[in-house]
Amino acid sequence: MAVNIGGIRMKNPVMVASGTFGYGPEYADLVDLDMLGAIVVKGIRAEPWEGNPTPRTVEVPGGLLNAIGLQNPGAERFIAEYLPFLRRFDVPVIVNIWGRTIKEYELVAERFKGVKGVSGLEINISCPNIKKGGLAFGTDPKRMAEVISAVRKKTKLPLIPKLSPSVPDIAVFARVAEDCGADAISLINTLPAMVIDIETRSPVLANVVGGLSGPAIHPVAVKLVWEAAKAVKIPVIGIGGVTDARSAIELMIAGASAVAVGTANFTDPTTPGSVIEGIEQYLKKHGMLNVKELIGSIEIPVKQ
Image 1 (cartoon, rainbow, N blue to C red):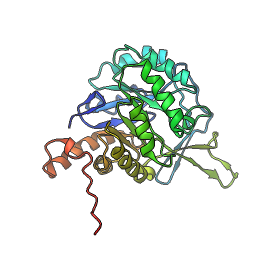
Image 2: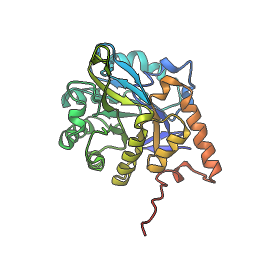
Image 3: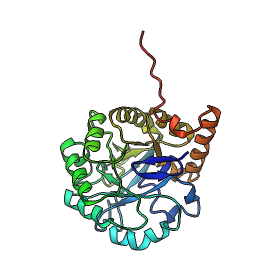
Image 4: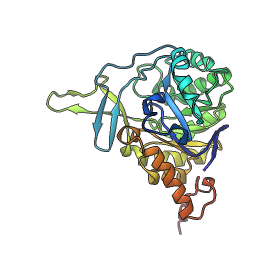
């Protein structure tokens, strides 16, 4: 079950996605953190950030709409208050980093240089819920290249840009990330979406729009993971609607070397464990001795 994601050695390919698992302590009484392949913590900026006004979440058929706005305590407080707790566990910790400017990305990446207990950085260049940064970087190949290249110069940690689904050709963005020094890529981030209260005729979210996650976006994730995995040699982490082993396995067959459980953590915190167990059972059922046999094993029928 072990995989190596851009230099990050994981005991299994099942991670928890940024923004859905807090910083670890929030789930420690519900989930055996040591069983996870990796923990990706909620987005961290160099300085604290209060996020968007409430209401910031709303359930929709097949998923969740959120406009949290990357609320976080800042790098210094995260390192001082949360990282000591995470160091107690035998699981890689990947820090999701973000900024409103390229300089802010550089600052937060540099702050984690040499910090014990951090295995890698996931670069959030695709959040649709902030006014500056976010999609402005993730939907423009040139701007994205500038961010990744700048961060690459500031750290030797494995870098994992998190890609947006809101682009015309995901392969272009995957190749840009690889060319700029990324060690792996993760996808997809949430899809921009909106909900209106028909009685008040006003948006439900204070931010007006938010990001859609959950089972509703899973087929989109499968398609984009498949396209990205064909375009690059670096590992791909599949994210989007992983609710059970079947949905995780589907992403891995499409080309993902690892998967991340996101929204399902809110509805059933035992999901990561059942996904791990389900993948193991699938490998045994199909006579596979190594999970690597599953990765990218999709068979496309040849047209006659």
